[in-house]
Image (cartoon, rainbow over all chains, first blue to last red; front, top):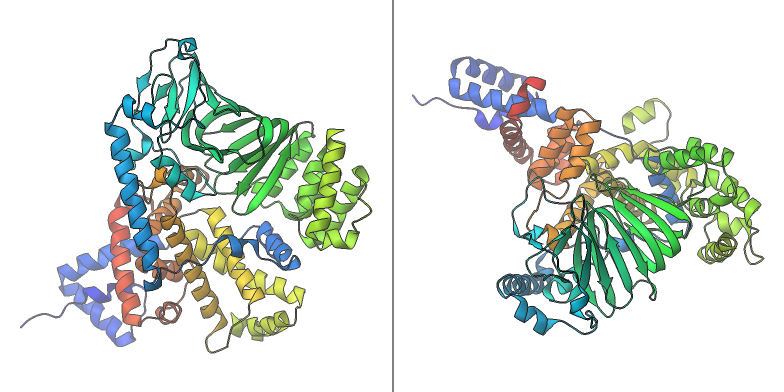
Length: 419
Length: 191
């Protein structure tokens, strides 16, 4: 007589989700059936692993942001995260995506298997300003494969943040390039690049002794420091975009705002006309120090505008930090870091306010919309102590996060900051 | 939860929701405090420990809940909020796959490697390893595992959230458990 097995009920058995009778029946069967016992042991092991999953509280800042969004009667995350409906209605979307992928694969094939002659023919004047090639140093250039051609492995750099994925698709399909010169050592570059031109989609990688200077079209340059890896994501007259996977770059840009952008694993650095140093560590965290003008760091619908003399940290997986003065006190900075990344909440706000100084005005302005409502009035008072609110704004307006009033005060804060 | 609230005179989710409809900010905060752990924990485990995405999901769920209160009361409130959360996670995961940039297009499922490594250094290795493997399961297998072992829902409650039968829940859990056992066998001695 054929024996009845219970393999499909093993999870319910282990989780005690069966009736008493059925549980007893299976228990007795397990004593007789080796197959079901093996199945039981596997499921039980899986249950033991699943039991290791943990619950966590959301950090305080989540409620602060919800409350702020309600106060503003807007919901920034809602607008930034459009509802994805992938039903039959979006068949057209799939079709477009398929075409894009086909174009991309063709472009990748074309780029990989056609060498310099095709590259030269396709260089665009806007992205590649004329330059006397004889001035370039004669340097040995090593060729490295592009990171996106292999299957995933542990050395694959983290995918960088980008606010405009469509740009990347367009850009990678292009064959435009940036000129560069080697300052020291022998930076490695991707296969579509030449000894002095970094092609779109290619990486430049520096070791402990190499450095290079990349010309960003005709708007400035970026110095790539040792032990760095940077990718040219795209370049056209409307936007030039690099991706810093790790290491340090120093940018000097003279251009209209938002023309030059650097993606990092934890944020997007948008040039607003400036000079700055940007570092990405092994964990993908970013450290920005602005030395001239402004840089906006953006991530997940949030933005930190960092003026000259200020710094900002973003931590991968934890979000965008609040800008702080390079001259702030160690205590203020530590409290701010706890507030930004360790769920410091009101306790951190207390510490910041107790240790603030004049140079913390930039942090205080950003904190107005980041602290909870209960702490906002104290932040308002602290900031008003350093920068008199313009006549057009009211305390109530700021406390309810009136956008026009916040913008007006920000303008005044920046004026005082640069004085 | 609602039964417990009645016993201890704490306002129920339904009462809080009614007050929220009248714009009561304290009720909104209380509703958030009572339920944030559910939403955040589900999202955090769904995305393998990615706190930033979990925060975004939590914010999105509560903004939807508080700004467009369309709970009709034909299900338990907690069932409803889990359903919204799972749907938000599904949407976000689809969006991530849809808009993945070219650098990551050949490495689906692995872009968070260093983040996971960082978490492993900070937290218990087994827990993080499990979290990582659960996040790699297909959503249909991942969802019941999270609802069962993070939120401790019964098979019936999971079936209500996911809109399927208890048999389907049991079957998916069976497959999920076996996959976890197979992928995490090397950590057997640590549990």
